Every structure is written in structure tokens, then in C-alpha cells.
Amino acid sequence: MRLKYTDFAAFIAVARHKSFRAAGDELGLSASAISHAIKQLELRLKIQVFNRTTRSVSLTEAGLNLYTRLRPAFDEIDTMLDEVNDFRNTPMGTLKINTAPLFSRLVLVPIVAGFTRQYPDIKVEITTDDQMIDIVQQEFDAGIRLSTALENDMIAVPIGPKIKIAVVATPDYFTRYAPPHHPSELSAHQSIVLRFKSGRPYLWEFEGPEGKLSIAPSGNIITDDMDSALEAVLHDAGIGYLNYEQARSYIESGKLISVLEAWLPERPSLQLYYPRNRYMSCSLRAFIDYIKTTPSQATLAV
Image 1 (cartoon, rainbow, N blue to C red):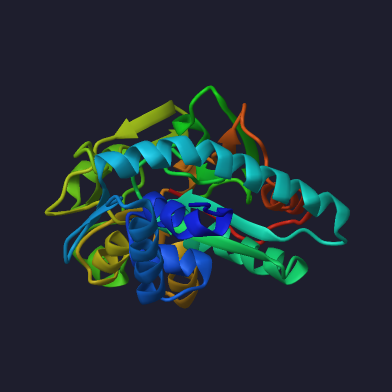
Image 2 (image 1 turned 180 degrees about the horizontal axis):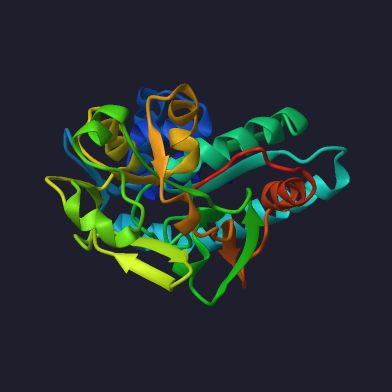
């Protein structure tokens, strides 16, 4: 029995994604075609490589052993094929980036839109997650986060402008409660509380004549999503500590009133990060060159 590289392509994709549908998306095939390819491979190998249920796909012990042995070889082939891009006029391939939903919408997507126009042969896959993940283990080329969240073994490149914040509420809210003129006055207000997935609340940070202040907001609405916090503010539920770009159009239209502007610090821009000791694909290299030479119009605050 002589098997070829292509005989294992579907197996590697399914093992990576734990999904026939996701493997099909990667290879440009239907889920049924992937399933058929796996069945044919199992018949030829005379072993079962996946456990299948209606809701999940997992490797059998034999499948895991096969995947562990094959994966380094496939990675090496992918690397060699990627290096061929150096001989093309324009690079091609797939770039996988992980970031938070808010960062994706306000910073990454506008940049990627311009990038893919310049490099039409590169496909960019954006996966959003509010949690910090291991981009190496999850097989992403890069991630985008705040610089304070990055590990020391990562190389970071600034992406987008410096971060800007807005503290806002509706005019109706401020008819019921006097607008604060000092961060300490927030204790008399209903605030929309943002918290991390861990349950830890997000502190509201300020900087003014008295130095730096960190306020733990209090209120009846608690969320782990910035867009939900904005919606709560728009429904007169309280004051929000928001992304300025989220609130910009509402501030300009008068639907929201910005306060404490003299106390709002400017923060460093987000960072595109990737592993220090890992081969850099031509797609990632092209993207880094693009963000270094193309000014971004996005404005972000968290």
C-alpha cells in the first residue's frame, strides 16, 4: 500500500480543526467530501482515525499517533511551499489572526480591507475572542492585543493609532444626575460595569492634575462586551467608559455627552504580535510591511 501526500490532507485538516466543515472550508471542499476522504483513508489504513458523534470529532489513539508523526512533516512542506512566494511577483497564502471582537471591528478589519485589495492572493482569516489565547497552540500566525497583555517571547509591532477613551452618558441621564467634573464623583452615578471573562471588573483609569486615578465603577448592569455596554448607555442606564470610536457618531449627533475629558489619558496603540522563534510566513511578512507603511484612520479606546 502506497499513500500520497494528498491522501492525508483531509486527515490533517480535520485533526487540526476537530470539524469536517471547518476542514472543508480550509481545503475548498464540502463537509461530505471530507467525510468521504476520511472513510477512504481509514479503509486503506485499516484503522479508525477519528471518533465521530453528531456533535463532535476527536482523534482515536491511533489517529493521534498518526497526526503527531505526520504534522511536523506537513508543517515543513507548508514552509517550503510558502518560501516559493519569494519568487512570485505578489505573495499568496492564508493569514490567520486572533483578536478581541472590538479590536477586530474598529482596527483590524479596516486595515485588512486595504491589505487584501493590495494583495488579492492572500486570504485573511480573523477569529475573535475576548480571552487571551496561545496563538501558537491554536495555530494562528499572529494576534492583536494591548501591549500589557503580551508574553516576553513575542515580537510586537504597533498597529493602528494611539488609544482614546470616552466617558459618556445620554442627555436624559444627565438631566437626572449632574455630570461629574472629577472622577471621584462617579461614585454617585450608575455606571455600566465592564468585566473580564475571569470575573474581574475593568477599572476606569484617569490621569489629571492629581496624577493617576483608578476607579472601580459600580452599577446595576455588568457585561463583558463593549458593544453591550454602549447599548446600555444609549438606553439611559448610566455612564460608560467606552471606546471613543464607538461613541464618536453619538457624541457628534448629541445623543451622548462626553465628560471628564481633561482626565482621560492617551494610551499606546494595539500591538500585532507573533512568536519570536517561529518561521514567518510570507503572508504575515507582507501584512507587517503593510501596517508599517500604511497610515491607519482607525481610532480605538478600551
